[in-house]
Length: 269
Length: 296
Image 1 (cartoon, one colour):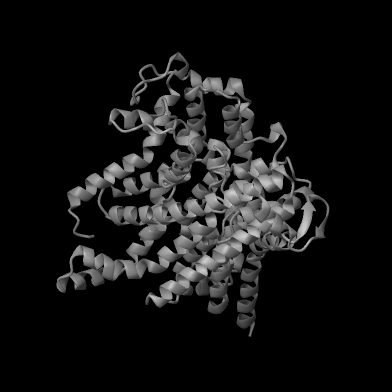
Image 2 (spheres, rainbow over the protein chains, first blue to last red):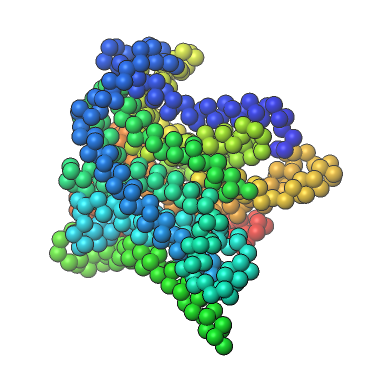
């Protein structure tokens, strides 16, 4: 495939990337439209009369500020806890004897193959026993298991790439494991941390299933539930629905595009 | 002597770092998953204790028209969507692996549908698929193509969900990019010296070397299909029309949290898990016999 003509490859690459962002682009255009004024007969490529009012309307039809605050609180708790648990575990793994290390990698791969649905039923019971139904902590809970075994593996691989002699030298200088992790390993693996932050943020900010299962008190609803409510209110107002979709998506996309070059490159080279 | 003790102390500390994660994973993932296996053989409605009932839940599953329909839909979804997603991810990785100037941006663009929050993604496609004023049908009509009813017709509704999910392939795409980068360049140069074209190089060098990655992604995608159709079918169609988009996750959710029959939901999960394990082992055996690397 390597001698596919460079120009053809560039054109195809451009077209494919347009295709992947096109629905979101349409949604942005529609979010500035006025769908109550009548149905468009052609695809709109640019908002003819940009209206910010759809975004203000979101806050009038549902308590959007409350949902946003709840989502922010969940993310603010879940991201640091995930970073702490995942990086500590990754570091612990990287310092094990080679055999144990391999077993831990295998155990993590097995954990990766457990789908969320397999734990819904019993996790509901655990959350119930802990008295956390309706609490935002029910949504933060997976962070205590590093949110995703992949994050532990990413840290493990990053820490393994650092030379063994470096850890050895620090140890001979009298540094404990805590110092090695905090002063040596973490500062040298910033791209991994950035990547885990972005992925964890996206995971909790967009989490729909957990609040559907564990949250019944409207005061604890998060943004994804807010979107579902706006849809269920029966609005045929496309502009309002798209404004809601853009409102929840924009923070993730901005974070992703600003930071992707720090970690996507790192992981691929 | 003291240095030896220091090293041991260091190792013990490092082991301790694993503790929070191990406790979290056991309590939140391993135990709940194992408990499901036990609950599958009990009558358990959330309140009161579970009561052992043998294989009754499994019998009830096969007696239910709703469950049979859902399983049939899941089978169709897996057979169509998993290969489609895998091939799409591979083609995109082959196309966009270039180190050219704009390609970093193109790769990020391909990842976009994967990071868009699921509900927002579903709402956007709800509008894209609108038969009258959705951009998809407006575009198709403009090109002189027929305008399908999409979400309100059982056949096209299933297709619509497969279609929208075929864009959420960022994970597989990144994994395959990493796989392609791990193929030594000297292999391709040697092939070129031997007069092999790009097509031959792909079949003889690239494909065999990335087979383990493809297998891993197939297995993960198979298993994740127990979960990843939940939000699309919940938000877009709530399983309809005529149960056409009731896939395994929605089925499990309904049985457990609408009918409060945790035993039956657990039995369904266990059944699906056993079937998938059989499929995974079958594929592995097939690949080994075909002369692929057995040590995946």
